[in-house]
Amino acid sequence: MADVHSQQSEAQSKPPRSLFPHQFGAVASSSTNSKDDDSKTKLPSGVVLDKDGKPCRLCTSAASWRALTKQAKVQGASTSTSEPVAEPSSSESAPSLQTTRDECPPDVENLGRSTWTLLHSMTATYPVKATQEQQSEMRTFLKLFSRLYPCWVCADDFRTWMAEPSGRNEPRLGGRADFGTWMCEAHNEVNRKLGKKEFDCRFWEERWRTGWKDGRCD
Image 1: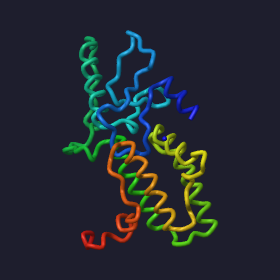
Image 2: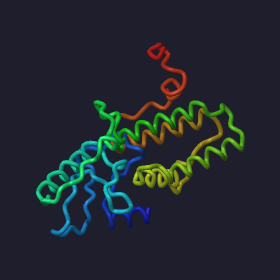
Image 3: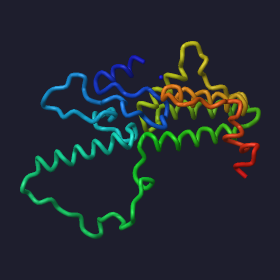
Image 4: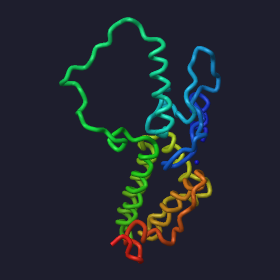
């Protein structure tokens, strides 16, 4: 899931095409400039550049980001000088807690999972029959969301998907049933791109609103 997008890709990288992905595969696109020269360091596979040309953490998987960090440390060690580096004072130090990955800035996978939880929950609480005002508000939200989403690659992709020329992907906002099914279809678009099993949209309410009938969520 446009001319602007392709221009950005040529200038920076060929970004992965996915909506709020749960994960990128190990062979996700490299964000090196298509016109590499020997004076530039090749970035690890899967690293996506932001629009300013710097690595985008929110667009990159945790594995690729760790590879980039490791590469930077190795390069830093090999080019270090004898000049002392100022150490932060005790008052500037990070809290002395045992940090887990959950306490680190999100990568594209964490961001994607949290985003889908939010979006599906919004469909679950959407009115059974929405007024024109409610439909207009949600349409405005989706339009802004598709421009402000932190992973710019994903945002571009979602916006392009919704604007599919036939109109088949336009948000269906008449009521909860239609909106929930539409969001499920958008999620399945990601599942297809990632080679994951698609979700049966007949059961989206059990998954995101009422809980499964077998009682597993009680």
